[in-house]
Image 1 (cartoon, rainbow, N blue to C red):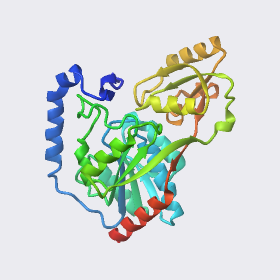
Image 2: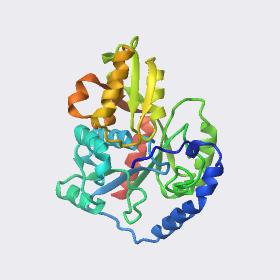
Image 3: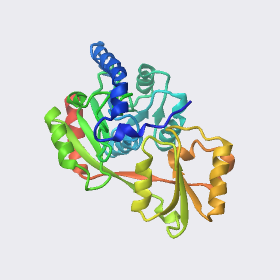
Image 4: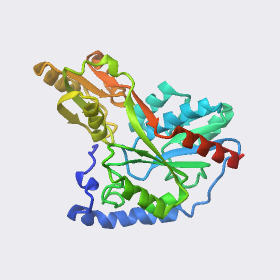
Length: 318
């Protein structure tokens, strides 16, 4: 059974349910502490980067990984994206495979070995910060400015895989700006208190194929992603008329009956159907002609700052 993310995870303060589950979060913290003592391995034959998160799901790891891949190519670097194989994350693996050189194996050690054999000089992992035995050369954490760290608790009491203090071990942050009214000053102050040296790169998402849509029509949106609010906000920002929002658990495997119900609703309301590219890859083939998906681009507020950061870090590795 696949469950949706609990709403109380995103409350600004923990509620009764969060405190009820807190003893289990202590076990997660003990596991994290033990993991920190695992001997680390540095790979000298290839540069290793990891794009991960502390907040579980919906922070934009996959588009950030792809953005870095394209960014490094412009810097005349030969990168490959990578992801540990998970049966329930085929959508993200297909997405990266469609848009980049991509490797996926059952474990990250084999993935790195394969990248070395294929003569890539840099590997960018989508997820993997919590695999502490790998001494990544560059570690990025992704955040959403609106969700930030939710109620601040570790799973299952809250949405965090690690405590926010783990940022002291990371090199950079990609902060997806949802709206300019987010508590950015508070977020920046919190980050600087933990790690004054960490670089923060503000980002946002743009729609590449906006011209394909008739904004004047009614739309039914559906998604099974970590942060469906980000998808809805992107549509509303671009003036889509959303008459109904349907959400499924993250990485949900769509069945015929799910899509048929959505199509029936769209026909009844004379509406178009729209979803994300990752969701589109999980839809049964026979329904794909009836559904549109967004192609997105990630943009960095200050690309020159990122260029300088990467050049400095790469020179340090060399």
